[in-house]
Image (cartoon, rainbow, N blue to C red):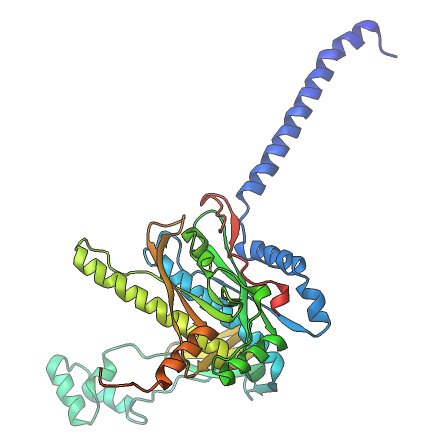
Length: 445
């Protein structure tokens, strides 16, 4: 039993113990918090969460399970950091990369041919020892050559060698080791797949842009393919602009560009309706000028070139939407290689054992489209600036409309009478994901 004095004397020690424990607990918590804050952030994982949330909110998953549509996802990292002066252009290219990944998955579901080939290659030599070095430069004459040329140097040696039909350069360097396989055990499995299909009516519904807070970005896209949209494409190709109006779906297209910041995250094609309820296709294209100088005239010329490039990008997206086809080839090889190789030199030999795992892959996607279209025009051109970079974005909205095609066809057929989209951006220093505007919803598919 403790005496009163012993108990009192123990109080400071117990207090110190509690303090040490408290400090230790605080230190552990600080270290844990520090570890969490310093853990690398994966923008692709952030985008996956945002894409799934969007799909759930729109009830796309339920409709996919009923067979009404296909949900396609694609992601790709921007290959340069935001500090790169060409980041804006890389960003646009990355969207195309993410989209073709999604389209390739769709084509693979349509039609895929698989082929697999496995090869086992085994060899064991009759001898386990390295063979003697063999002088292959001058078989049968090496010893005689040494006897005849002892003491001969410089140009005389070269002349003597040339007289004997020997290239002097062969004797200017040390001989290379001669390799002999004592054992090989190779197992390789190669899988090859070929897919072919179309991308008619496949359009991106929403795009996502994630970053890790340090300037590294990833682009994601959710695209939808449905029978309703494929039927709409077929009508465009055959109806010559003659569509019935749907006044209930009429909308003011000027809202697409009323807020320029909303356009920064808009990529790809959307099917919308004009103020009379007639269908339209809008395509968002972006690019940037490559000029870094200070000459105002040259700068203006480069900006115009960038705008034209954005138009081509936007028109290509409409072409792919209406008449796109894609071939998707991929192959991969896995296996192992076990080798026992002997190396022989004139005065030494060695045996090396190597083991290597094989992991090879190749993928090729080719998307093509060719179409004649009437009534395609620019709805608006715009310029803006991404909050993460100082490089201006130059963009266009290209539009096809049923009304525009009808008007153009009517004008061309008339004989002359006589001669004459708001995106919310996270601060650049914090990890996060931004999204494109939602211009289409579930009822569009």
